[in-house]
Image: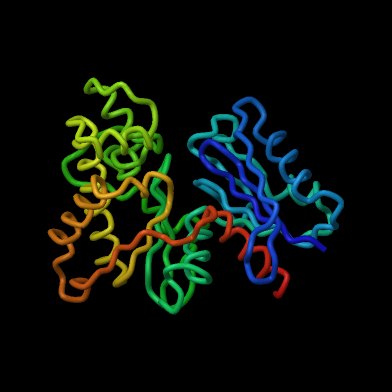
Length: 297
């Protein structure tokens, strides 16, 4: 019997087999086709499952989600913005499988709590900083999911001094300011000629003025959001994953400076913010945790 993990991201899908120790095997990835995302997702799952009977599938999805209804409305997948019944579709594909859905941030914090930087921590935050910004919360040793499953959506904390429009419909969200895609757009609007967050980070390391400013803007916004969330939730450790989070000192220097400035309350004055050590995609690992633990229910 096979246990599968599925990560529905902003621009791509990933799936893999999961063993009882939450290790992933046979991971495959595919672009999230704009015209028919389900076809790309279905083909990926079938390829990963192979000839195995599937007993459980864990799904981590970009939000918003509606966990009780089993539906998702990813902001960056236009074909699914009106709602897509992902759980029903996966159950139809694997009729004998238990299917569990969570927002990507909940999967992220599950992964960090079970096998990553939040092991042994009862109260902490996990964040991803990549094409978007997301997060999840551990409180009293349990993942906080909220009424619809969207708790921990840290990308939509509003940061001070910025009114950049966000795909969510709001303004000044940390995702609209500090994600890799948002930072690239900001830099390009000021004359930088690159295309990706990785290129932006490389340019910053070379001393490019615009790239450094874009990184400082992103890091400051992240530090503000982290400080606000830490004060709200009374946590002392934050673990950050995602491709843009690996941008190094041009991002992390301003981030740490913002935390030092804003995390002034006594109960968070020793707040630790760390880069995740998980080498595989943390959301996919967390989706695997969902699936493995579903089989034990």
